[in-house]
Structure formats: structure tokens, C-alpha cells
Amino acid sequence: MRNNRLLAGLAVLAGIVLIVIAIVYWAEPAKSLPSFFPGHQAGSGHHHAKHGIAAFLVGLACLAFAWFRTGPKRTTTAT
Image (cartoon, rainbow, N blue to C red; front, top):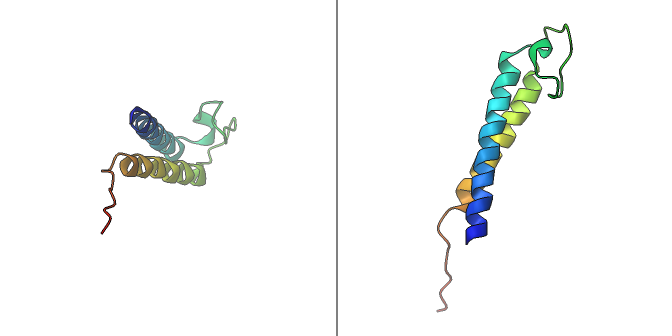
């Protein structure tokens, strides 16, 4: 049981971080991105919209995973 809560908590944390990263990709041009972000290019005014969309979708997937992981357990009854 503890493992499920830990995994769900990590998925929520990863989802929130990825959504924040998506916002950074949409708001900042390539020259203003942190150097460890993929797509950083010195002197470029290009926005990496596809990187932002990908990070946002993976973040939503992590949140959905956590949501389903914390749902009630189904029990099967023999009839």
C-alpha cells in the first residue's frame, strides 16, 4: 500500500514539474531558456512550441496516472 502512495506522489510531482517546464517553453524564446533545456540556442528568438506541447501532454499523463493509481480498489465477488 505504501508503494502505491509513493508512486502516485512522485507522478504528481513529475506532472507539476513538466507542466511548469511547458510554460517556460511557451513563454521564453530559445535564447532565454536555461542551458540544460533541450532547444537552448544562443541568440535565437524562436519559441519551442512543440517542446512545450510534449512536456504538457506528458505532465497531464503523469497526473492521470496518479489519479488512477489512488482510486479505490475493486474487489471481485464470486457468484
